[in-house]
Length: 489
Ligand SMILES: *[C@@H]1O[C@H](CO)[C@@H](O)[C@H](O)[C@H]1NC(C)=O
Ligand SMILES: *[C@@H]1O[C@H](CO)[C@@H](O)[C@H](O)[C@H]1NC(C)=O
Ligand SMILES: *[C@@H]1O[C@H](CO)[C@@H](O)[C@H](O)[C@H]1NC(C)=O
Ligand SMILES: *[C@@H]1O[C@H](CO)[C@@H](O)[C@H](O)[C@H]1NC(C)=O
Ligand SMILES: *[C@@H]1O[C@H](CO)[C@@H](O)[C@H](O)[C@H]1NC(C)=O
Ligand SMILES: *[C@@H]1O[C@H](CO)[C@@H](O)[C@H](O)[C@H]1NC(C)=O
Ligand SMILES: *[C@@H]1O[C@H](CO)[C@@H](O)[C@H](O)[C@H]1NC(C)=O
Ligand SMILES: *[C@@H]1O[C@H](CO)[C@@H](O)[C@H](O)[C@H]1NC(C)=O
Ligand SMILES: *[C@@H]1O[C@H](CO)[C@@H](O)[C@H](O)[C@H]1NC(C)=O
Image (cartoon, rainbow, N blue to C red; front, side, top):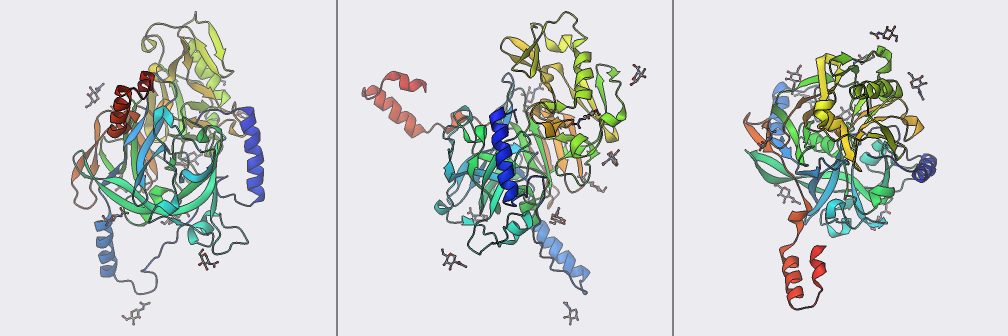
């Protein structure tokens, strides 16, 4: 996500301190929670047939896949933001949540939230979740296993005390609240481009307080974390045997929306690179950077490894952040293709210039190389974006936002869009290939072996306009109750 102001950093610092003091530190280092796994075959005499019978039952429960309808803007708007629609509660209500592979939990704005956003991104109608409105909604208390394992259980926990969470985001944003459990509705793949509604019980955050732009108008209902931890919706559904821990996204940078599917993708085939183990995020080892045909002359240690230096793949980040030692030579090399550019720095962070021709003809593609010969090619039209009559460079220097993000490599939608990106937590790999995100992919049904097409979506607020409301407006105008300009809202 985008950079924050000094004030927000200060606020964040104070909140982090409070958070630290309250010992509620579950998320700060990306710590993970553990679910209880009732291993019913523990003990000395497990028979193979019993195991197999269990597997058969489990396979029956495994879905062929889940199709998450996706919305969000591509170009020419510089700010890419991708969100999915899910249903929560009984009766089910729709929620629009940003899909974020850089964080773990699902949270939505809750009824008593402080400064709740009302008007959503691009006019989306937002809904505040109220556990009391849902027949299936219940609070998660601090003595429940989930809470203890996630570190949200204070020392003086009593049975009726709620389980608190604080989710901190890499850009300094945060959401605070308490955990609830309710039924989440999703679209199970049932045929080619066909789905049927399915559900599962999920523990998620009821957001009481959000930082700056997460709580302001133009926000969404919440964030759906697709991180690695056991607290994610993905892990919860997987632990109940409903899905495999594999998912893919194809964020359409041209038309907006795209594909977000949970399940085993068999087409397109992608090359993969191993995930760096024991990292809270999806970290991969980057090995080289190529500009046009030339490799940047960098020593291998600048790519480094680990949370500080390994490249983090994060769909919740819009741009791409590189350590200064990589950023400087990269931008210098890109700009060397056009010698007469007059550079301007906008908002202290964007390097921009005047250019009216086709950027793809004038600038080189940038290719990032990873372990296992996987590479990711980023075209000029993807890393350059129009801004106030100028063209700006999307690559950013890390550490400009906060000191502790110094030297981090964070690859967001700038490089991930227009690619099918596959996360395989069963095999601990990640991979991608260039792909048309307005087309479809194929998912394999784990039970029957049959393969189904899953297509692209492009949710827009337009489809939420209620016909009844439109009729009322028209009638009201005809009857002279309202002035015509109301039609332009
Ligand atoms: C997450 O849960 C799985 C079982 O579902 C368990 O094997 C694994 O150790 C857990 N991971 C962590 C980090 O607790
Ligand atoms: C193991 O098998 C024996 C004989 O079939 C049975 O008596 C015993 O209760 C079993 N133990 C467990 C832990 O299931
Ligand atoms: C928890 O709250 C419920 C209803 O509010 C009450 O009936 C129950 O006795 C309480 N339990 C404890 C342990 O306080
Ligand atoms: C969840 O799915 C089951 C099985 O399809 C269905 O019987 C149940 O009514 C659903 N629950 C909700 C809350 O939609
Ligand atoms: C990544 O790089 C580190 C350090 O060079 C190495 O130990 C590790 O095996 C590499 N690969 C993975 C998948 O972690
Ligand atoms: C690459 O950089 C090293 C020092 O970092 C330098 O010695 C070497 O000449 C450079 N190679 C090229 C081809 O520029
Ligand atoms: C960032 O990396 C550079 C070069 O590797 C190093 O000199 C500098 O100390 C690092 N900065 C931080 C804050 O770690
Ligand atoms: C995961 O790895 C196993 C063993 O290497 C392989 O047989 C399987 O095809 C892999 N799964 C996927 C989805 O690539
Ligand atoms: C992408 O796929 C869509 C739907 O199949 C098709 O209409 C469009 O022409 C394709 N775009 C490109 C660039 O191939």
